[in-house]
Image (cartoon, rainbow, N blue to C red):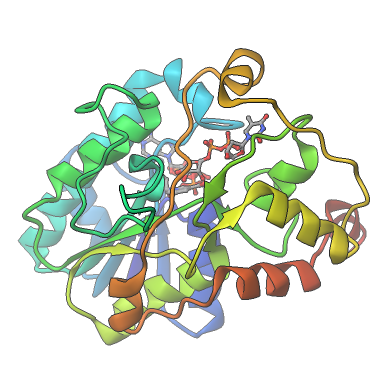
Length: 293
Ligand SMILES: NC(=O)C1=CN([C@@H]2O[C@H](COP(=O)(O)OP(=O)(O)OC[C@H]3O[C@@H](n4cnc5c(N)ncnc54)[C@H](OP(=O)(O)O)[C@@H]3O)[C@@H](O)[C@H]2O)C=CC1
Ligand SMILES: Cc1cn([C@H]2C[C@H](O)[C@@H](COP(=O)(O)OP(=O)(O)O[C@H]3O[C@@H](C)C(=O)[C@@H](O)[C@H]3O)O2)c(=O)[nH]c1=O
């Protein structure tokens, strides 16, 4: 049995749907079911699972700005909880996935290439340059530095074919103005498949950048949204990151390029970012369409 903590959330529900569709025996755990911060209570709820996926955490709604006002929940969910899950999984000798984020980096390496798993985070409390959210995600990875049988999977700006306020494509369609940035992204379907891959095939445990190959600019993504007929909107852009910070954001955002070669070499099912965007956009289901179904 695979236990999914936070299986009701945006990322967790995508994982649960995939596992269920593949005939896996899945159990979703929620904060209602036990005390996440008491290893005995969490351990009892986990029972005799054979694999665990921790998709619980605090992200803020509608975006990470909300974490600046909810620091306690954010610190507990993103930095303390991974430590409790580690303790429980190690006592049960249970292999498991922790969902981390690529938002612990900003920019590119000095030579313009993407960050690898061995690059230390540069958007963290140690650099004193980050959002509270990113700081807690970097701390969550530090807590797991010596974790056994643990897959730390770094998701980065998820997108998919379903219109959803958490989907990057929906965000770009709805934000009044856009920040011009270059990012690596993660196709949510392939992230869910990557979690299943860890459960079934057990690659070497450790940190993996679970991002699609390559990177894209905001302009490239909006041009693709237009060429797929999803919108004919004339997008407006901020003149600079300073203007974006003054008018649309509370916390600084991570925009970054990630290197996924380690994940590809380990067999993770990750396609080129432009191909993944085309697949999601060519199967686009708008909120209006899904509401009438
Ligand atoms: N969405 C994104 O853009 C990205 C997300 N991630 C990471 O993926 C994971 C899941 O994110 P996402 O699905 O978007 O988030 P959601 O908020 O949609 O879901 C997270 C779930 O975690 C539980 N939860 C909420 N607050 C807390 C808390 N303070 N402590 C413990 N559990 C809590 C809730 O489940 P319940 O009420 O059932 O307990 C909730 O449904 C997080 O670790 C996040 O950092 C990484 C990169 C990008
Ligand atoms: C608020 C806002 C953001 N943006 C840009 C900034 C950035 O490049 C991109 C995403 O910014 P958002 O504020 O939507 O998302 P943010 O909350 O920063 O997104 C993150 O969520 C958490 C949970 C993660 O772990 C991250 O990996 C990432 O997915 O959109 C705009 O263009 N216009 C806007 O008005």
